[in-house]
Every structure is written in structure tokens, then in C-alpha cells.
Amino acid sequence: MNDILRYLENDARLTPEILAVMLGKDKAEVKESIEKYERDGVILGYKAIIDWEKTDREYVSAFIEIKMTPQRDRGFDRVAEKIYNYPEVQSLYLMSGGFDLAVFIEGKTMREVAFFVAQKLAPIDEIVSTSTHFVLCKYKDKGVIYNRPETDERGYMM
Image 1: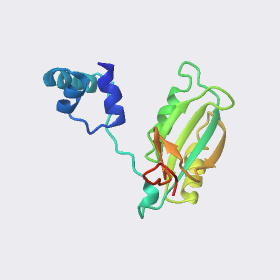
Image 2 (image 1 turned 120 degrees about the vertical axis):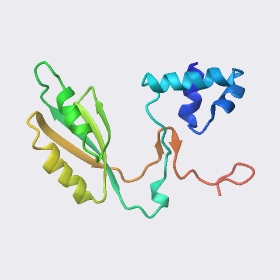
Image 3 (image 1 turned 135 degrees about the vertical axis):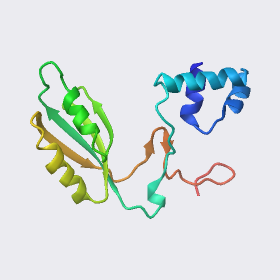
Image 4 (image 1 turned 120 degrees about the horizontal axis):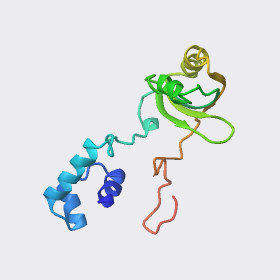
């Protein structure tokens, strides 16, 4: 039934009826599988991917690298929990390589993002350093290409 997950990941609007037809399965079986995935925490939510640049919403997004000292007995978990509970945080990952945590946040202004780093991240004792990178343009996110060039009926860019 991993096919259900792949289809829903690409289009969460697919109904159990449509999925059943696509998979050649019984509608009740597909619906039951989806409900089980939701109960088991395999499906965590359903979201639309929005190109906010095409709206009047003003915001900036940033990628923040964090170097830290892991805690005895808890590793990175306690600090990660503190960080992911901030509403500005969109994503948080434990990383290998030159830094420990990668944080993706959104704010109304660059100043708001700077305030987040200075007032919320910097005071955390285990954090040794941060490096903030502002997103200037999204080309692709979650598998979706933004601002794809328009083409004519022959497939040539206009």
C-alpha cells in the first residue's frame, strides 16, 4: 500500500474513491489504509504548496546553521525540542558535516529573523554558533518547480 502514500504525497486531494480506481483496489480497503496511516503517524498532515511570491504576503525565509555542544544523556534532542516549538520554525533537521542543526524559519522582515537568532537561539547555552542565510529566490521546493517558463504548443519557451 506504499502506492497510496506516494500518490497522496504528490496530490493530497486524491480521494479514497479515486485512489481505489487508480490502484485497482476496493474503496473501503483504501480508506481503511489511509485511516491507519493517520493513526500510526505515517501520514502527519496535508498541506498545500503556495507560491507566496504571487500574493501580497510580505515575508522572508532563512536557513540557519547551528553548531552546538550536545547534552549528556539527551544529545541534541532537548535543544531541538526547544527550537522546533518556536512558531517561526518551519523545519528543523539534525545534520552531518560542518554544523549540527539546520533550521528553516520565516519572518516578516530580515530584522525579525535577526531578532529570532539574537533573542531566541543565541541565549541557548548549548549553541556555540549560528550562520544565517536568507532565501533570495525559490526555484524548487518539495518537488515543485516555481516560476516554470511558459512554453508554446510546440514546447518552446516564450
